[in-house]
Image (cartoon, rainbow, N blue to C red):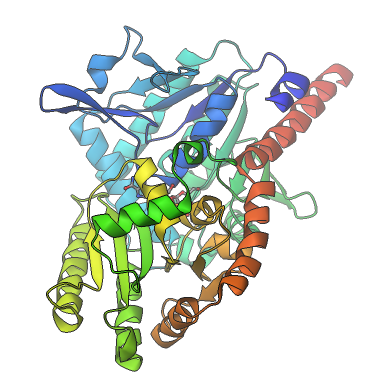
Length: 491
Ligand code: GDG
């Protein structure tokens, strides 16, 4: 807020993402409000609140149309409005081609090393382009003047930055890519590789979670476009436009507004243990994610099985509570994962469970945010075993939730978060033996060691919270604007 007031006065902030921060659905005879399971939303919502911006997103809820005004806007958060959510409507075909097809069957597997083959269809690409144009029209319609800051979010909008640049040449377009960027060899398989790069290079700034992904992006540009890359300034010049390509590790709100509403750790622990019927000597391990093949959920189950095989004394003494929020469920790869997870859970429970004990509880439904934090607070261990993950906010949320400085975080080395949360037990989820050993280490860790590890991780997330993430991008944007204005004055 301060940066906006001091360095970018009178500047309108427009956020563009596919997913909306508040979804209205019809349930029975009334309208139900849902905050989606999305790292992007968790990060951007407090920022948009703080700068009273405008958020443009796809209106996908069944009651979304019923709750907007005549300009397709609604003031949010409900009950405490501080910014406008502008909904964009998509046809079934557009949603299928742009979102499920090109974004989630093409770009998502292309950018993640999870060995799921990307699917590229020309019809999906056409829908992707058309939807990006629709969002560009909406940005232009929402812009109060020629010079807004537009925060373009994620792989759903690779073409949007250039489309905005063409129509609002003086806008600052900051694009944040929330997922990894592959190396140029992998990237080269995308049939529209040049178009995507050209689209993104309409941005003033492109952000990634890690320097490694920023380097991969620069390498792809170098290989496929005639451009000038200034490595020292991390700037790429292409077609008369210069784009900064930086790493801005994303984070979470600190202090999390939600935590103030929750009871303390002991109370959360007691409540949850009662709800799931856990005995006092049973350790609770949680996993929280969208049901996605990049998150290594099956690998986590494998590690648990290995632990029970090698250390049978833990059978009956450990429960893994897996929250698996439904995601992209109409796509075959996701349906298959869901089936495999269900089968594996049944198998484990049959093999190691008893009448009053199930080692794995998989809850494949969406939970209110408060409940997710309640799980974090109640857990002895949080397992993040992503096969590949841009950042992973669950790891940071778990740390933020533990004001008792207890609890052990097991974290995949392939999640961006492992570059920052150095005191976690870092694992390679492909290495089942290593992951199960780390699980054993977590189960037997003394409260003192837990505190020694948790404290610096909490300091890290507190100091590098989401306001700092947004703040560093806005400061860079302010510098660019000043330089641009100066160049104009001096000719
Ligand atoms: C992408 C990148 C990057 C989970 N279940 C429920 C629920 N959640 C919330 C968690 C967390 C979020 O969803 C998941 O965030 P992640 O960061 O772990 O993962 P992605 O959704 O894949 O996010 C990722 C992120 O973008 C930000 O840049 O970190 O690497 O893949 O906030 O708490 N929330 C609710 N109900 C659930 O059942 N309400």
